[in-house]
Image (cartoon, rainbow, N blue to C red; front, top):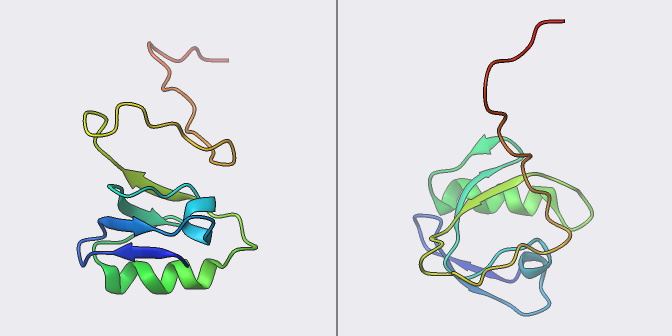
Length: 92
């Protein structure tokens, strides 16, 4: 997979050109969920990442500190969540 993860899901290292880098992981990320399944430790995360494989498209939620990574750019192959709507919804 090309990723080094601490027991708390903190990404320590990402191999250049590996599956983790292609998926958008960067050192300093924390993995939050894979395919809608919340993960709290490496024992939960690793099997999910292995099950997804390189050919599948799956939502992977990460968190990171913008102050620690102010120049971070999300790779083009990573989907972003649409912005939240503000205000009341209109009824049809």
